[in-house]
Length: 150
Image (cartoon, rainbow, N blue to C red; front, side, top):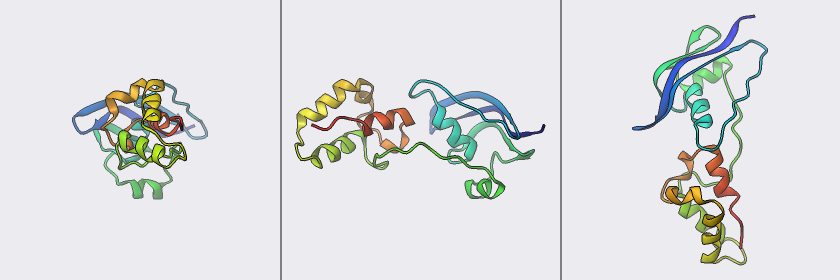
C-alpha cells in the first residue's frame, strides 16, 4: 500500500505561541488514525496545520505524494483532503468571558454566580478568560460550551 498522508517534522502554532514541535505521522491508503491526548496538547492545532488552516512554521505535509505544505486550504480540499471538526457551540470571535456572559444572560435564571460556578468547575478556563474562543483547543471550547446554566 502507498501512503496517502505523510507528515514530517511539522511545527506550528498561533503567532509566537508554538504548539507543535516535530510531529511525524504516516497513513497508508485505507488506514485510519486516532489522535488521543488531554485537552490543550495540540490535537486540533495539528489537524488545522495539516489542513492548512494554520500555516506550518516548519516541516512538510505530503498528500498522495504531493507536497501540500504551502497549498491553500481550498486547493487541498479539491485534492481530496478534509476532516470533520468536532462541533462546539461557542462564539469564536468572543472571549471566554463574553461567551459565558452570553450563555448566562440568555438563560432564564442568569446570574453572576453562575459564571463563578462555571469557572470553579472548569478552573483551566480562568487563565484563558480574555482569550477568543476560536483559538482555544477543542477541549477548552467544550469546557466553555458545557459550562453549567444557573
